[in-house]
Length: 295
Length: 333
Image 1 (tube, chains in turn red, blue):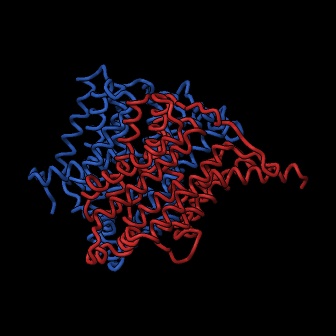
Image 2 (cartoon, chains in turn cyan, blue):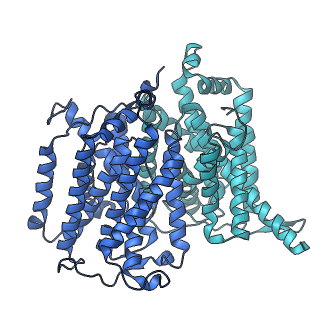
Image 3 (cartoon, chains in turn yellow, brown):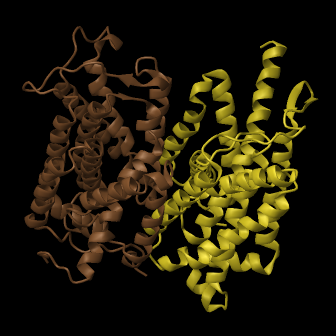
């Protein structure tokens, strides 16, 4: 291989890893919710779309920088998720699995169609000066927005780990994930914990939406695509396995990026799906770790 | 805690009487005479009613929620259209194939896909199957969008079709007849399944897979048969839908929302009853039509609200509500 093709390879790899970081963020939210409540959240991408549209609306109305709108979007996403779990999904009682899957599918349809009625179907984007700026590092072009997104992901995931393993709340969350009844008997308010977890998951999706906003157009049904990506990431990593979700996200990003570059860009979305089907069939517990380590 | 506590427990498939089916068929048969001007709505509603019924053989009877039926619909539509317009496949086909034979080929292909797909995924339980259906449908959609021979993103167009017994297939009245026959077929097959060994086996598997296995029922085989019947009927519906559309593109035919729509019609109507999917499809289509000017393209909003309400308050769908309300139309149990 000559040096040009080596550079191209690293360029593609870096691109894939940074995109993969965002996928990891999206997948971590989904996996967290699954790990604690065994709910596959079919509205996950639509919550990401909410994050994108809040950012868009704030930018259009007040010219607020997308990264600054994180201060609004993250708490708003948490509150939304908290309320949804506490007042809607909790009503499903013990009818989890199938019932919660359909309920979240319905929530997703409500979100995307409400966005459609509010913002219209045409794709919209925000124009920030740093949207297309890049810098060179060892011959590899790196997009600034994508790098910020990668760093944002890192902060969010480290923060989540600190929360889960260094705080009393985290202990309660882990207890609820392992054995809800046992946790309840130890005085953990599991309904409260489940609402907090759903809030965290939605906040993660919404944060990913904000980080994507400087890079991409948004439209009301954009979430569909990201729900699928989140499924792929979590299945690659193992449902409910948080470190697995991070690894799964990076793997998906790299698979897509390399596939698009070396095979065909038209099938960019197909490579992840095929990997997903293969893992589902051959290793349903995920690529990483034989025993599924839950939250 | 047993598995029974975590799953919705649909009771036996009630409303299994022929009276309700007969009454619905009479209403459907009278529609063209009353609403002769709204035939487009009538045909598409009936096709989706038949698709929801077909979906339910897998989704209701076998309890395997598919969110990828658009792929099977697409196989029916694409196969028939491609074989009827052979200039796209010069190497395979010297002359156009009549649409009824094309529909048959489409059904066979759909059954083959279902056999492979189900054979691979029915080892997995619960939500994994649903996730796989989404992935398979999305991969097929990408192939359709990116292949020259499937008309890529522009899709396909049928300029002409041979007549069937002297009838013009592009006449809305004829299409209504075809769609009616499709609904009738799905209803008859559902009634037949209900009374067959297959039907009892499927119910047993759905209610308690381990228990059914202990009784000597092979759950994977049961689900597979249900999937293959469902696939064949869905592909047939796809062929009829292609005739109705005459021109279609992958973005409208193979999208996830189509799969979701078919599934939700059946679930909202009531997947544990024979006529539930049919009633769900009729009601949701009428609702969508009435509020079309209000919601325009956001017509799936009502699906979202209803499925949320149904999962929380009426796990057995609207038909389940009727039964609970004491409107017992020939309960067979």
